[in-house]
Image (cartoon, rainbow, N blue to C red):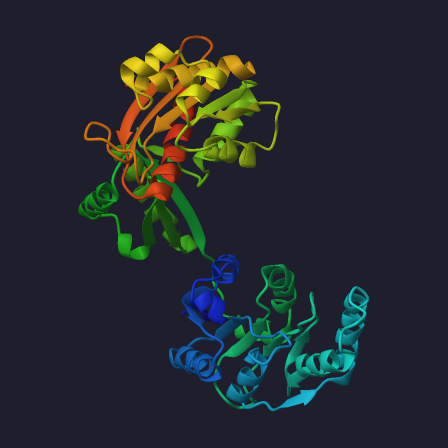
Length: 431
């Protein structure tokens, strides 16, 4: 069996949702790259007994490694090092040399605030320099050192890697932790994992479930693969993890997905629609502009975030009011009066207006009812009209009813718009 690891994310602010955990997912991906199987990711508050209970449960579940994040600061609620030392049966002692190195960091920081109580800070500094006997110290990136704490000699149990909570400190420290002798020993049985993602758009997740049934009927041994599906932003992500001997099984499964969903499968290498649109724009030398109502500039934002170049993402206009649609995007007021602001006719005019206003090759127009107010019987909340047009006369237009609250409708709308752009850049018809 491969090496198994459990992650313990500490912090009441994470447990209660005030702060979103970024460390657990980041560590899980780094561990997969090392061929280490992440079995559990546990979040606990800043209560010593809860942290200890999490360590005990993971150790009892046979983890070879446990990685903690958080609880290494100078305040009273930062007790991870103490709890881990006690759990591993390794008493803490002051590392005077480490104390001095931390103090040197603090002195530089204190120069900004000359009126601070230096003695109080020195006491906090001393707390951070308490190290379990036999642990390897990971030099601080901020002010908190990390630790790699093996079980006591002759005692079976996991090695525990103790890392700080801030990602800017944890991530560089991780690179040092994996090179320590204690980590290498605990991870000696690591294997190799391959992971691939297929992305589909325009089908429900249940269709992939049906495809998996068809794969089993065709004799494809799906039990040899670890397949997870996720519906996100209207796309179905199919992520498959496996060890190298199962390559042929995966290839057979991927081929079946492609055969059953030729129109819906848009990514076989995990690239996002954002990346594909950016590449298509760059390779073709075409420029793009947006005129957005209910999405409030989110499509332009996604394009700019990934494209990163004003050479082909020229920008966009946000046009909520009818007056703004006319003044900024050139929509004929009589068109709005005849068909309403939320209509395919206005979406088409917005796309053309965006191209004209910014001199772009491709225009995107979006108008809709994101909610929670403003819907009608004919156009309930979630009604969104899209149009993408080019200077050479190509056009794709849609009216969709999208589920969810305001955030869901707006978020999913950006994905729909980018898929329509992808199709028009590929020269696909409006069918």
